[in-house]
Amino acid sequence: MSHRFDIGFLGGGQLARMSIQAAQRAGLRCLSLDAGGDTPASQIAPSLIGELTDIDKIAEVLRRCDRVTLENEFIRAEHIRAACELAKVSESKIVPGIDSLYTIQDKLRQRKALIQAGVPSPLAVPLTGDGEEAIEKIGFPMVLKVRFGGYDGKGTRYAKTYEDLLNLKPIWQSGDWLAEQFVPFTRELAVMVFIDEQGAGCFPTMETIQTDHVCDLVFPSGVDASDVAIAAIRAIHGRGLYGVEMFELPDGSFQINEIAPRPHNTGHYTLDWGGVSQFEQHVRLVMGWEVAKPEGKPACMANILGRVPSGYHVSAIQAALEIPGVYFHWYGKTAVKAGRKMGHLNAVGDDCVKNAVQARDRFFHAWTTPIH
Image (cartoon, rainbow, N blue to C red):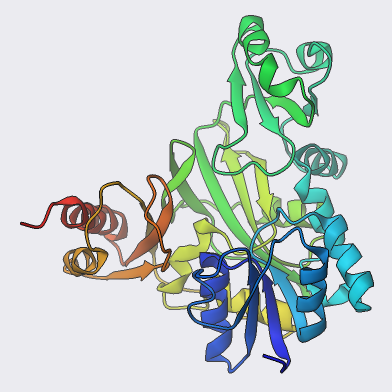
């Protein structure tokens, strides 16, 4: 495996897999780096086995690939910068840019950048000492978040009272936590933003339904939050594809929740909506190609989360596909774990939400019914 590659992916999960599939349709050669030996990405393209904290391994990807991108935002920007120096390559070959990644990785730094740029965002402060600053500036109820690495509700707590805050102190007193304002939102929205030297644009604003802090359903929202989403990415000096999660408030205004510098779960519907997918757009941005105008039919995405015990998924997919306008995507993960994202399905058309829910119910019934 000595030849060069067009795109390297730091991470080998389902987002890398679907991005590689988009890249391969354009004849691009891809390489992924992941600690696992049998990953969703390694099943369809060459891979390296190595920890994503290993600067030497990251440098190897940088040397062997013309462009490099991320599957997640948890590889410290400082490590990637050090790998660029070790590999003697320009940081410009990394999409998204290392500076915007550095801002995003610390949720407190992300909040400060948004607020400084005038982008609507909840006020946040460090959670230190006995929480005096948080009590004074935030008050109750407050949201507690780990500053680095939290996702899907992991690293998030709620303190409605002073007693709640004290009871949670064993968790946050070690540092690296923030407290932010609780937002009384009416619903959660998400926008995929793409930005390059020529300008910025968005996929449609989608409504998201969360179950236990994990995205459950994504479907058309009927509103347009593009301006706020683009302003958020400009505030962090972004370049590439970004998922922007936000809150809609009772007065119809929007506040930014979180930003992800990569393809995002809330953009999976684009695989089947009839226009450019978020993954093809991601590849175009990484390669420096012309982006496509995102246009497609109404679509709904339903996540498939692991349930234990589970049966054979192939026959369950057959049951789901009996619903009209449904498309299935399985990620190829080697182990089924409760709550783990194993795949998703998309339903397209005017009845997309109803059909997505019905198809998923049929899938789960078939997947979890014992075979006699």
